[in-house]
Length: 454
Image 1 (cartoon, rainbow, N blue to C red):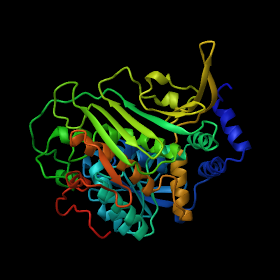
Image 2: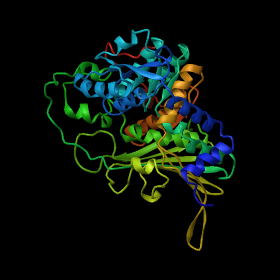
Image 3: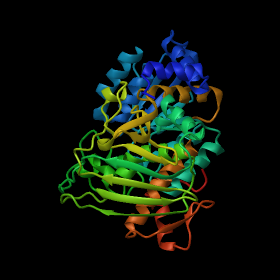
Image 4: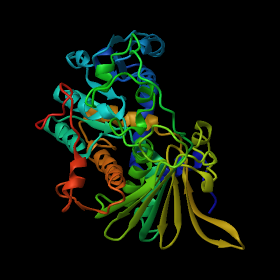
């Protein structure tokens, strides 16, 4: 069977009654229609506007059913350009605040978008829920397993919609891949490989220096330990344990979530991880080479990371939005699902999927395939629709927490020298290992504290 073009794929999913695809089509049509009355628009505050947050602000501002009411960031130098982008998109200027709690106090704000560095995700989400706001929070959901569970509790306690930015769960082509697996056509799956390979060199130490004049460094640091301003902390925070958990957390969580969802797994029985920081001297703490092995009841999942491999390619936006498939052997973000009847290679963010049968005459045989564009829009559609319907979103906080937990468990094992950890799924703790359990929760710096009762 040859691969489907994007148009053929969308037509086939519509004709077979793919309910989600129909819902996306309806919502997309609504989004492209005339703007909703101001009283019916979802009013949003974007918390953190550097990078991904700025993209979110512009995209939501372009929707006729939304309004960006606030841009919030501790770095005031980011406001002029982002305000201009939003104002151009929605023809109305948003308010700007350095402390996003001012936006939470505004009863006219319906929801917040959290696109801060990782160490702020939990507290911002919990405060949002407590203030009666729905939340779209970027991945990974949390800095530690304990605070991830508190985010779930806050969402449930306050009846809030919390959507995680793992947008593959809203991609029609990913849903089709999951349905293909569920149909039994791939056969039982007992082995899954998750790949995360790119080029992200280490950086040299730089001296502390005075904080830039428009940056509130104390609030940027938030729950993390206090420190003088340092450019590496500010711009390379992904690779310092106090702020994040390396690239298994930063980028690999996308693939981990997609693999866990596609294979239908929740908690692993055990995990161990090994690796190191081998390629180039510098100050990064997280590994540039990492392998993690997860044991489930009838399946083994492996995660493989390298950060010194420029020949491994993250697909560019043009490929993601085209009918092309990546060259899989050098695709930096693929998932391989080994079924008894075939091998599915599944790509994130619009890269599509292909199922391979036994080669014929030494040539590859593609038994099935699907494709689709970068799934931001259907994921945003789902978030706004759930705000209105109060139904659980595609990437509910519970699912985002469990996928982030997978990555956090690997890092705990790695930091303990590759120790095998046995998981108690009921309590989300590690059996008979007090030392490992100390990594489940961080020490918080007052007043930036995740409370016990949310």
